[in-house]
Amino acid sequence: MQEQELELQAVIGFKGTVQSSLILHPDQEHLIFPLGCTVVLRNLLQRTQCFLQGHDNQVNCITVSKSGKLLASGQKTFMGFPADVIIWNFEERREIHRLSLHKVAVTSLCFSCDETYLATLGGQDDNSLVVWEVERGIAICGTPAATDTAHCVRFFNNSEFSLVTGGNYHVVVWQFDLPNKKLRPTQANLGQMKRVTTNVLIDHADQFVYCGTSTGDFLQVDLSRGLFKQLCPKGGPGRAFQLGVTCSALLPEGDMLLGTGDGTVARINGETLAIRAQCKVLGGVTSIALTDDGTHFFCGTTLSNIYWVDTDTLTAELRNTCHHERINYVAFPRGYSEVFATCSVTDIRVWNATTRQELLRIQVPNMECYCLDFMPDGKSIISGWSDGKVRAFLPQSGKLCYAINDAQKNGVTAVAISGDCGRIVTGGMEGEVRVWRLGRQTQTMEASLKEHRGRVWCIKMTDDDSSAVSASADGSCIIWDLNTKTRKLCLFESTMFKSLAYHPDESQLLTTGSDRKVAYWDTFDGQAIRVLEASDEGELCTLSMSKSGSHYVSGGEERLVKLWDYDRGVAEHLGVGHSGTITCAAIAPDQTFIVTTGTEGAILIWTMPPEFVGKCNEMPE
Picture 1 (cartoon, rainbow, N blue to C red):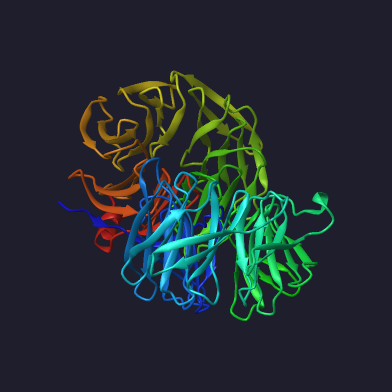
Picture 2 (picture 1 turned 120 degrees about the vertical axis):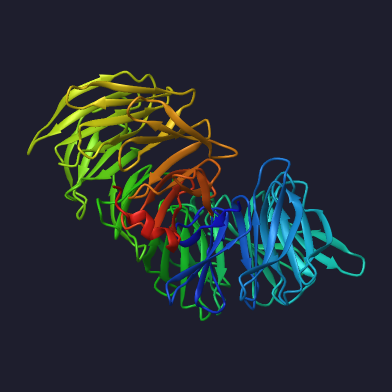
C-alpha cells in the first residue's frame, strides 16, 4: 500500500547560519530562505507560506535571478556523494533542472544578468567552478576554482561572460569563452595582503569588486586590471570589523551595507569607504535583503532572527525569531490547541499556533531544557533542566513560580503531571524516578524509585493518577504504582527505549526506541502483543497518540513523520520536511494538526488528513 503525503501547513524556523540565505524576491512580496532540506517562500502580504521540496539534505545556498522567474538552490551532503543544484520555476513552484556534478557540497550560486547561465561553486572537497546553460540544464565548462578553497562566485552586472570568485588568499576574475568552452582566470593583485574572502560585491558599472574578508577588512579591487585600490576600515588591524565581514549589499545611490560576525550592520560611503552609520543586532549577520527602492532591508542573523532595518537611520526592528539550536520537546496545554510550548538549549518559547508568532520566551542562560509540560489547570509550565532543577514558570509573564533544587542528579530528563495538579513525577539522567507532592508553598519528595540503570527518556501517567510508566535507555519500561510506591510491572527489550504512549483505554502501551520498532504491550501482564518495523534506518525518538487511540504519530532519525492506523498497524501518511532528527511530535488536542520539532531547530506544523479528524476525536468506549 502506497503511503500518502502529509500536507505541510506551516514552518516556524529559519536557518540563519547559511550565508546570504535570506532573499527578498524582486516582486517585493516573497521572502525566500532555506530551512533544512526545504526552501520556504513566505508571502509577506498574505502571511502564507509555500515550500520547495526536492533536496535530500541541508540546503547550503540559494539565489534568485534578476527577473525573479528562476530560483536555484544547492545542498550539502555526505563525503563522497554528489551534491545537487536544483533550478526552480518560481511562478509554478516546480523543479526545472537538477544539476548533479559537485561532490559533498555546493557553496555558492549566481545567475548571469540575462539568466542564460548559472555559475556554481563546489565546497572545499570539490572546489570546482562550473558554468551551466539554464535553458537545457547542461554543464558548458568547469575548472578548479583555485589552488586553495573558494567561497563565493558572482557574475558581472552587465556582462554574461565575466565573473569573479573569492576564497582563501585569492580573488580571481574569470572570462568565460563560450566558443571554446573555457574559463580563463586573471588573478587579482593584492600585493602583500593575505586575506580570506568570504563574499564579493560588484558595483553597478562593473568597475570595482568589493571583497568582504574573515579578518574584518573590506577591500576594493579594480576589475579592469585586477589591482587592489583601498580597504576599509582604515587605521590598522585594531579598527577592523570584529569576527569578519560576513555579507554585503549595494544601495542604488552607490553606498554599501556591510554585515559582520559580531552583529554590526554598517553603512559605508561608496567612494571613500568611510563608515557613515552602524547598528547592532543579535547574532552574526549572515544576509542582507534590500527592497527595490533601497530604503529598507531584511537582515538575517546566526541566532535565526530576522530584522527589518531602515537604510538611512539603521534602526533595526525584530520581525521574526525562532529556535537556532535543537528543540528537545513540544507540549500543548490540556485540551487547548491555540498555543504550544517548545524547549531548546537555552530557552522555552510559547507560540501561537495560528499566527505562528512567539508569545513568550523564558531564558535560563547556559542551561538546557530537556522536557516541559503544562499544568492541567494551565496555571504554570513545568520544565526539567540540565542542572538538575525542576522550574515552574507562569505561562503569561514567564516569571519563575518555584524551583525544586537538586530534583535529579545531572539533569531532569522527563516529567509527568497528575490530573489533579497535586503531584509531579520526574525522571533523571542517572535513572531515578521521583514523585513530588505540590503544596501551596512547598514541594516535597514522596518517593525516590531507583531501578533504572540508564537515562529516563519518557514518563506517562494514567488518567486516574494511580500509576506511572517510565521508559529508560537501559532497555526496560517500568509501570509504578504511585499509591504504594512500588513496581507493578516491568517490560524488557534489547533496545534503548526513547518514548512511550498509553492507548486511551490504558489496556495497551506503545513503546519505541533505538531498535527502530514500535511495540504494543499488554499493561495487564506485560506481554508484547505485536511489534512493527517502523523505520528503515535510524532510531525512533517520539510517539504521540490521538485522543481516541485510532491513530498515532512517530518520528526519529529517518527525518520522516509517519501517521499510523493503530489497529491495522500501517503507516498511512508520510511527512517529508525535517533535515535533522525529529526529537518530538505532538498531535494537537483538537486533532486537526500535528506539530513536530527537530535537531535543526525547526518547528513544522502538519495538517491532520480531514478524513481522520472525526475518527481521532471519538471518545473510546
